[in-house]
Structure formats: structure tokens, C-alpha cells
Image (cartoon, rainbow, N blue to C red):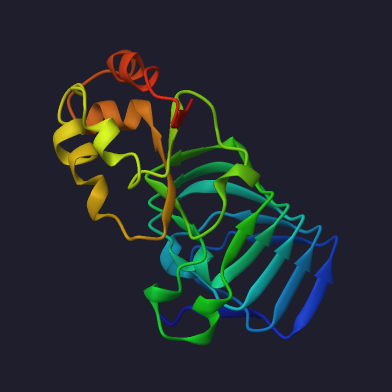
Length: 209
């Protein structure tokens, strides 16, 4: 079966509500697309959503189905946007080393609000996380994970989280500025509990929770 394709490109939209919800459709946002004060309802897999050379300003993303491993946010400029719903393994910001195409040079994120989202394994690349609002506990955000790697390895973490994640923070891409995890998901994956994780998270000023 050939998937339907929907394109939004070479235009500017304001105060629109876009429903990207048909699982049999491929949605292409870009090129040369500007969205201002728009609401985007996302209910498709990452493989159905293509983003390149898009400027989102004061937009709201309502993620109705968990969006997994979607790196194409780094091909967009995000300013003053709000995210709601669950995202895992997604990257945001400026990461030009990821690809040679021109749109990878345009990625940025600032003044965005994730406080109503659930993030797990999501990274901020090459942008200042101090302009962002992150979700609170049971999510927690490690700021400058590479720079704080030695400090974070100075104590024992519960379960396998320390062995698998913390010990390898220094191997992250150099432009990694912050990583957010979801404690219940981490606990299940690395054989510990949210409570045990929090008892360690609370010890570090470089972790927001």
C-alpha cells in the first residue's frame, strides 16, 4: 500500500491547528516553512514525520502518541514553543555535525516550555538550556552532562543506571548541553526504583528535578 503524503512547505502559517494524526500518511514539514502561534497535534510514529528547514515560533505541540527517537527537531528553529505529551530519545537544538545538509546548520531551541511533557532520554544540543523550562519530577534533567561527568561518577547510583548511563556520559557528543530522563522508565529499564534514583539526584546542583 502506498502511503499518502502531505506537504507543508514554502509558506507561512499563523494561528492554524494542524492535525498530523493519520497513521497511513507521511507528513513533510518544510522546506522554507514558518509557523507562528500554531497548534500541531501529533499522533504518528517518528517514521511518518519529516521536519527540515522549519521555523516554529510560539507554537504548541500536542503529542498524543509517544514520539520515539525523532532527531529531526535539530533541523528546525524552535522559539517560544510548548510541548505536551510523551517524547523519548528525541534531540533538539543545534547539532550541525549530525548531517552535512544545510538544514542541520539552522537548528536551534530557545525559550521553549517542556513542563507539561514527559521526556525520557531527550537531549538539548548546542543551545542554552537556561532558556528552557523542563518537566519536574518524576523527570530529571542533567545539565552539562559531559562537564559534570566526573562529579556524577563520584558516588554510586542505584541499579544499572550508573554503569550503563552515568559512566558513559563523557562519550556523549560534545554539543550535548542537557539530558532529561523519566525516573519510572529508567527504574524499570535499569533495575531500580524511582525513590532510589531520587535519593541520588537530590545530591547534585547540576540536576533539575
